[in-house]
Image: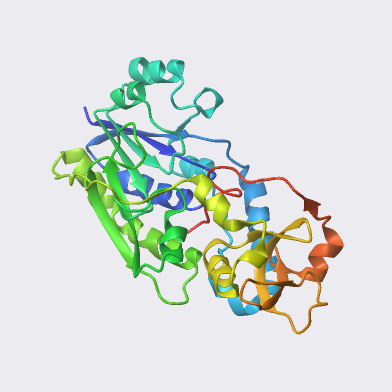
Length: 337
């Protein structure tokens, strides 16, 4: 009897479908795998709706931001659900998408009896009963552990001026990204790279490591590296605080441009209204729309709001004031690779 693998895949994290596709491809024809099932850990968008939204978003960005078009997320047409179906993998959905639901854990143990789990960006902390349902549970994290535990690891590594950004496959425990490391990899960060460009490069490297990882998991022939104490951790709250700017006049122009490179669009409050600023320019005069002065005396104004020219955005959107939107993981999801 071969191994029985459940891949826990998070639909709201944009690079998961491509990584899941690589995992399922590597499993096909593997004699030591009896079956593979895909557990969907959050609500997944219908494939057609996701594709239309992705194509429209890319077209709008490319049309109004041609000089930056190569740095944008490419249109994508697959979801976690569509990838699983393409490979013929059975889809499992826990009650309320809660992977720690006692009934779900009981069904795993008595109905499926899996031997291994692979988590791709699952945003829920795994509790002890769920971990005990597997002989081996491995997580993929898009940070170079022990540094950059938590969320938005790529963005923080770019923001902090690192020379590289990495990823790791590690054994899971009840804490966040702290288990022993099985495999790590990293890619360089070039001086003008956006977070998305680095993320794409990183996911391409991670996909190359799926086959070696799977072989190690199936054979048990791997050595783990216990993570050094310390390291860095960034929560969803940390990310929200850096891209939510209620007093832009308290920051320098250099800092605002740095944040745009790493976390765009920023939520910047100007004259009491919060705007999704994806590009800033040095204003020629203080009377330009939404102009404001920075801490170092530079006058800036947004020339793109949600990647649209400011005048178009203001014509079709009704700006709202106040409120802290956004959730722990991000505005909607981490970008696709």
